[in-house]
Length: 276
Image (cartoon, rainbow, N blue to C red; front, side, top):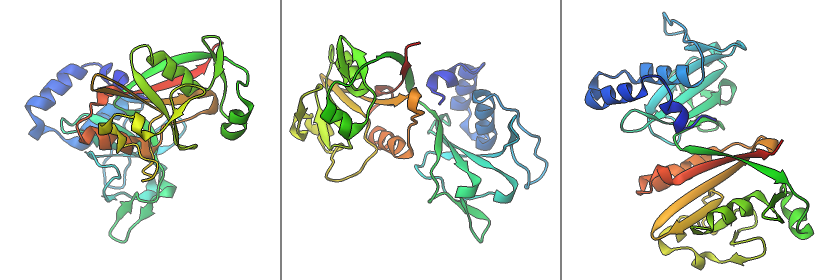
């Protein structure tokens, strides 16, 4: 998955964003989205000459249509000829017309409506880009540290500070040097402060407690919630060994909190792998 760092590495990115800020009324959102996709994913745009064309043909022969709108969790209905393409890349733009999320939808999962528009409501997208920081980390393989826990969760065990723990607890302990926090165990509906200790929701600060509520079953919670002096951090772990990927409902959770005033700078994705 691409991150804000990859976006900022695009040649001329600062100049482009400066121009957009100064002359937003001159910007063609569709063309802008195509430009960002071309440079983020190293693809070549087709020269579309009619409405039946598509924007990109990948090296593997996939035909892709690129669409853009200002941010919505689920794309609005758009006119797309599904018979012409394999994939749709939907670029969700922020108020400055900079990508916040880029979704990939399989055309066969979309529904063609009678008016020529397409419904995205039943599709499950892949997240290609998210405008947050991604941190890379490598763990040493550990041994089963708790048989009962292992039988329930089936998580990988990593060796961290001489102890065998799951990745979430390992990363939590790294942040615990500076922050209080919990692993939000959505599966077990528990909050863990370390490998052996769980707490209830009253342990969380009041202003975040209502956003992470197992009873309301909102879902999409990020793995770790950390806090210090009124500052919050949200961490999501994704393991490369299991090809784990961030999901749409986790993007919705991020968007929900940032719409309420939380900074996107406080969200970080940890991509971890085994040490070679």
